[in-house]
Length: 265
Image (cartoon, rainbow, N blue to C red; front, side, top):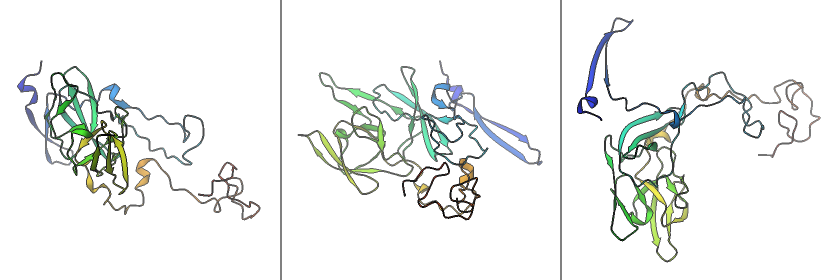
């Protein structure tokens, strides 16, 4: 049982090694606790995928020590819940909302601009009908959303998981509905019109961090923090290291570092 004293924030002042007074704020209720089933540990596979093929040519020793948060893209939960905390994912530049449902289920959803901390998520069922009405600030089916409204994290088919408009700062817009074919037309962030199911789920509003696409990379070591090294040209290598190296032009077509012909991309 949670008491009101669990949500009271306490203040703690201490002196750092630089002889400066610092003040921290915390709570006795650990709402940002990462559950073991909600996080994924990144394994070092030396640039190989599950089939054994090399996907990344070079990898640094800068590995992700922190576990990445497992985001749930299925929005078909009808139980009431509460939005407990927001967590930032640095390598993906996303914000996830930690939600506690009343049946004990805990999950992470993508955070939109409409999300509010400690707000309730509630579904209301009507008698003798299958339709469900949701508070219009979080997520719902497309058939219950007004036209020309902005949504994000959209499913293509019902209960299949969100596949569109999941990047930071992206959003879609509803154009029209067709009740005969049970479909709806949406405008994607790429200005492309696409048909979605009439009963697919989506989040209200725009995904958080809209300044992500406006960010200008002016740092040489920006991608080094993501665990990627700069790729060296094969012509600049020796013949032992690459088929293009050694100042010889015996290779007619472009080759990969492992001797196979490229796809000419």
